Length: 172
Image (cartoon, rainbow, N blue to C red):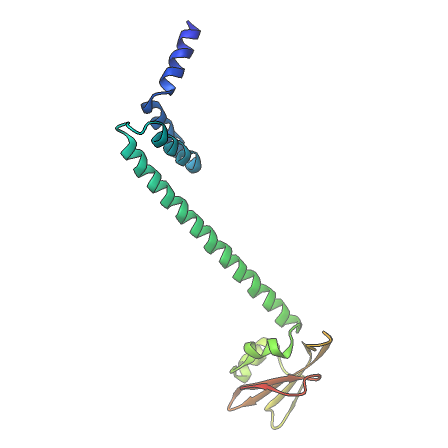
């Protein structure tokens, strides 16, 4: 009797209704990839079944869902990369581990108050408080050694930066 029942189950498994139902069960259980494989196999194995159209609809919906999940994962990865880069930049700004060329886009066009918010008060000022010097807040482009960062204001905003080892001013 057990052998007969086993044989009957195996026969039913080979029918389109069982295969279609099994694909739906996988989808309902959250096994999206498994359901996609099952529906695809169903269309391949039972091309003349009345349920092929429904299976193709499920395949299309599953593929759209998987595409949306991939896009979401890619966007999350991009956001995580941007957040990591922002954190690394913030750490480098805080510790002064940037060359004058890297400081320039950060400070360019900033007001004195904004520069103080980023770098704190300058260690030294000249030219009626328009040229500020920050000690050990830059890294020499060639040697990597810590050096002064000079910030130049004109019209109330940063118009240039330089450092000890830089022979010229980076400016607009």
